[in-house]
Amino acid sequence: MNSIKKIVGNNIKYFRYQSNLSQEKFYEQFDLNSKYLACVERGEVNVTIEFLYNLAKILKVDIREFFNPDESRFITKKRIDSKN
Image 1 (cartoon, helix red, strand yellow):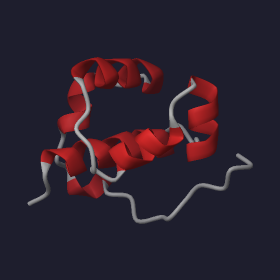
Image 2 (tube, helix red, strand yellow; image 1 turned 180 degrees about the vertical axis):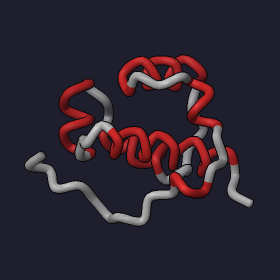
Image 3 (cartoon, one colour; image 1 turned 120 degrees about the vertical axis):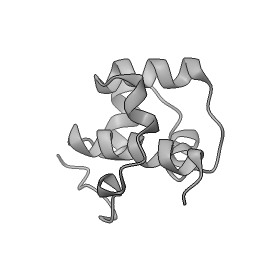
Image 4 (tube, one colour; image 1 turned 90 degrees about the horizontal axis):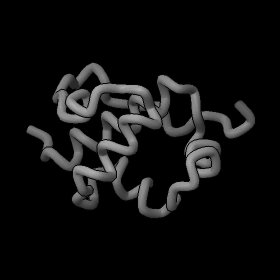
């Protein structure tokens, strides 16, 4: 079973992929700290509810979706081409 940090991080990555945004474009477009968000996506850090709320607005998803343990959302692709 995955930890809640890994589930949340993977779901953030999943919705970023669904938006067809590379990490670089995502950070740039929404003025996010790239190192911090990379750690969040890997499930290495705890995040605040406020951070999740703001990210849910950016990604246009219900905040509850970040807590969905659906393993079909796990991303195996290494990266999106940053030229998208």
